[in-house]
Image (cartoon, rainbow, N blue to C red):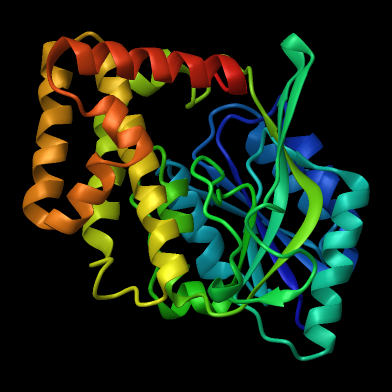
Length: 341
């Protein structure tokens, strides 16, 4: 059997209301792709919907039913069973834009046929908030040359806030397996680990300037809502600590553009953790934020100084009530600007 060029993993947990849209958006890939639907212990009709898709498209779709283990567990399962050269995650409440998807597949196929081995493919994504008729494109043309094979040395700028996210990244499957990537189970926000931990192993990549991934915002109980994120602050912090421990950024990451980018990414996640602690108005969470910064300082003073005196780090890490006030204002401004929760 001819190898698939791409594996899509679609993690599903009680996704009966919206999963069909996600799956149908990637079916036009035909026999070039495989779709692994991971039913993560759903208690609604997710399992039967998934099985029906697999019966109708047996050469494209496989379904794996498992006990609930969270988003990271579902991604791990998809990666374990993937047969495609490249690997991408599509969450069950999101979808791909039709024309961008066609160009994305054609580009990957051309790269494979020309035997250009690349480790990562970047595409744009779009925040979709239908309840407010709002949409915001997140593009990378200011950071990277587009539509060509590049390395980190070709990075044009490092603009904080324009981070590579799970929505925008496709990795070479073998690379993820070779580094032994395994995400924590029963933990939210592990998509940051999925993106961050493979980065030092990426040598060549391709930025395709198309608005592929449509990221739905507005579903009740969504993991990015402010109330939910505060409730799950300990999980956000667990991801933050693992990112801190993942690499010695001044010893393990020699390429200066990549190191600068990873420091900016770590700063962003640390700022989010700190801001959520402050927004909660809970003294217990205030202490957790202080402990986080203390840990970074003790772990690597160079990283601490970079984060502490970065443009965002300076705003949120000031001591006492002033720092908390600034942190909350910055968080709510970002929330308003991006309409992300």
